[in-house]
Image (cartoon, rainbow, N blue to C red; front, side):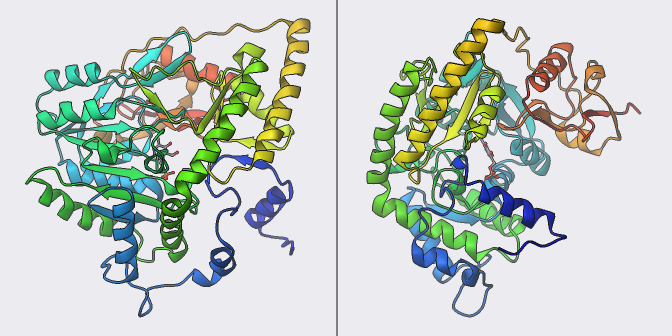
Length: 484
Ligand SMILES: Cc1ncc(COP(=O)(O)O)c(C=O)c1O
């Protein structure tokens, strides 16, 4: 392989792949394993543009249109739009299509930060809602139908709601029941299904937004399917006569927010992923789910809780392809566990204070799981020894779950002048940039919100325990609004 003297990114990637780490992170193709020989070999040559015969994403009438129509059929939508800038751009499109400036929209606090972009671009005003919180596990678990029912009663003027299905941990709300509550009031259901593109291909997985009354929903094919990074789908389904306007706006906004030079590599990988899943998805997911049954059993025997008991099917569902290892029983924090696995050649997707999250996909092989179990055996043995010597830390968040006070709309906050101050001095100031832990990329404070002491302490504790924060400068400073 060529080593260039002045190409740090190229060289960094070259060095990284030499390590041959086992990937339990996105993209779902896991190093190109499922991209067929022909597709893989042709990748550089597929990097083409809108020459005659290759259609145009901005006015699809040929092969792109055909591929989008096949995707709509496979994912049970009425229309599918290929996205080349991830679900992030799909979330922006769906919020701008469904919401007008000044509209109220219900936003659970566990939404991904791309929803902040959707608020700014649409000009909609958020009605924040706190999902259910399991204090014992220190985890937001789901948004309940009761919670939504109360929100729509308190805000009958809301135009719609954005909901995540599933979240980073694979937890899914009762989407169908929530869809009904919103539909009864003519409110739109916009679903962030970034982590759930595979769910429709297996009956044992939670239902996709397609079956739950969603008007628009997005899926990051690249997270769980054999598709290239950034390749995502935006889906639309008609429910009533007002929908004609919704699809017209979605078409227009799709043109507005996608590059005029969309990558054929990404679009082809969306076509490939859909075709692959239609032909082999059920069988491949059967295999993955079966593997995960014994993996969970082995890990459970090591004292690692794989969250199986967290799920209460009557309250919320869970995507069993998502493997979450709670290592607090070993006396480890999530980042410590993640680091241990990394040193054993296994790269996880992310960790929080107590857990390591692994993205599994149909590209995973049995030997990957065997390596994972081996690494966990060693980690468990070492952790137990350390625990005996040094004593386990007992750490619990004792923070407020109050929704921060909104002083300015996200859009007004964007336009204000900012200054940067140490995070520790943030309490009492108005947030200038979304800030939280990344991954999962959920803002603890949105711009325009009053930063409180509890939130600052929580963020500092996350940082101390090795979690990475987003929204801070390189020196760890916080963006706050300067009063005028
Ligand atoms: C829940 C959720 N929604 C949306 C996104 C954004 O998706 P993408 O990376 O495809 O833009 C992410 C990214 O991690 C996510 O976790």
